[in-house]
Length: 232
Image (tube, rainbow, N blue to C red):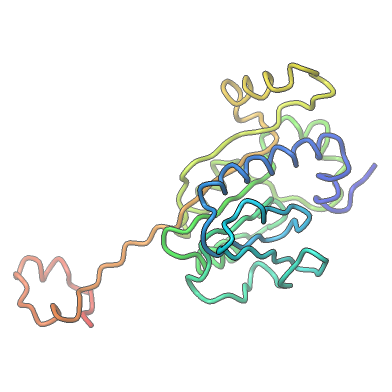
């Protein structure tokens, strides 16, 4: 059976549904310590995490097409949000179908506050899963390894905080040993995993003198070191 959308495969195929459950578990665990603020989810509107967040937080789902769970319809490469306005972004399979993702990653970084987090999941291009299951997904995929995804993010100012490999075998194949297989895979064969989960943080280090200090006479050595920095 062929699945025209990645979301269809992750919902309807047995192995895809298994991966979907692992990803949602990973995302919930990471959100548990990021439950305050403004949280935006890009895509996969059927995945809902509103129960994780504190009552005073704002959680909304954005997608490129409307459905009952979507609050805002917009494309990820042109986000309708002000700069530094979002505390946490949830981006399931954000890079999997993008042939040139840098513009979209830059948009994610633009709207994140300094110290804000991006939670990303993706299919691992090096995983064994491709040998058995990729033929069923008819949509064009542009997959990366976890390390390649991290390098792309780092160029835009998003740095890895933690990560996890998941998806080594479905319960129907391994039965009660299913959790053991996941543990063994993550410990000894991480790069064969079907999916990766990443938590990235936006790091900015602004250097600006306070207004009352702008008329200070700088040491000549320091002045040379600060050449090119304009004082307000």
